[in-house]
Amino acid sequence: MRSVGLLATRCVLGGYLAAHGSQKLLGVFGGPGLEATVAGFEKMGMRPARAMALLARAGERAAGC
Image (spheres, rainbow, N blue to C red):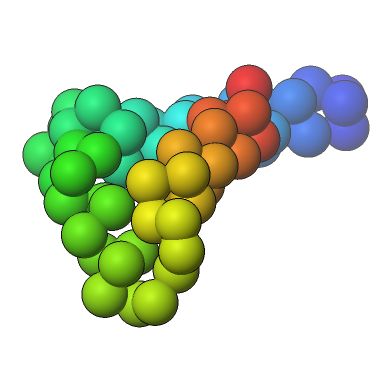
């Protein structure tokens, strides 16, 4: 029974991470999209901002799976 509870928890939390990553890159679920994320990363001083935004999105998407 414990395994089922852990699986359910992982699926719910993974779904949140995947949705958050999709907001950053695709602008779905009311998210800013890639260009706004890149602008935000540039404002924070991350260089190269586009690559960092794509890496952040990929990490959140992969962690959500």
